[in-house]
Amino acid sequence: MSSARRSVAPTTLALAALLVSLAAQTGEAQADDVDELAELLTERPADMDEGQWRRERREAARQLGRVGDERAVPALIEVVETETFDVVAEHAIDALAEIGDDRAVPALREAAGDPDRDSVIRSAARRALAEFGADPEPEDEPDPSGTDPDEPPGSGESDASELLRDLDTESAPEGPEFAPDVLAATDRLTFAAGGARLEYDTVRSTPALDGDVSALYERLVEEENRGTLLRLGADASAGVIDFEDSGASSGTLNTGLRATGEVRFYTG
Image 1: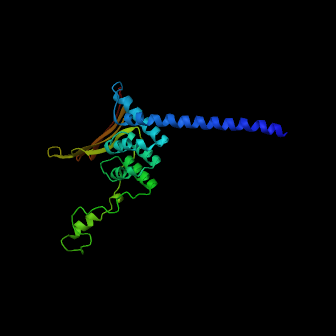
Image 2 (image 1 turned 90 degrees about the vertical axis):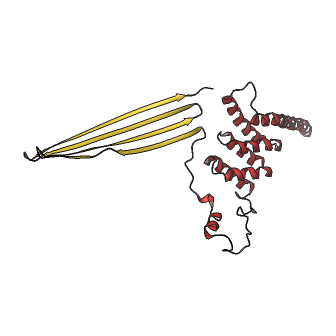
């Protein structure tokens, strides 16, 4: 029985050593890919079209987050600072949060507080800052008015300026959030009232009244590879004539509905 235990132990140690070696080789292979993936984030290869490069950049940002190598931080920061339209910026923010390098905090603060950035990007930047344990705004931000913060109120600064400086921009309402693959979307509902006419025929003593209204609904959704457009419209016109001599009246009501749709597919 003791000899059996002695024969199992070397086999177990050999297997453990093999697993450790494979794990080290895998980590080394991933680390060797960092420079190549980081370069792909910022420079488009000559043999790659724009659409393929966008897809490859997104996957590269996700992979750099999984590898967690700090050498990728400058390239990821550059994407966050310069990319305002593609979803790769959101992937780069998530990757910086996974790596956890404090060099990313200024770029994340700028993205979180930029009103021109997409609301999805701002939300992702705020989540990443929370993981860093950093506030969305720097603690000692200089006063843009150039006045001494210790100066008593009313000494050279109006109450209106003071109120604007202390306004919490984070409390401002944000627009709707779209799915990651939606580049732009529009919903529009329009009502229009046409002319109303009142007429009186003095020869036949017959008053008349008529008018019309219309409504139009449009929905446009633009995605990376396609766009869809839907239009729904409705029209209505009505009129009435009162015949005083006969004590009778005549009324009309005309309605119409229309619908159009369009689908576009983009290549390249």
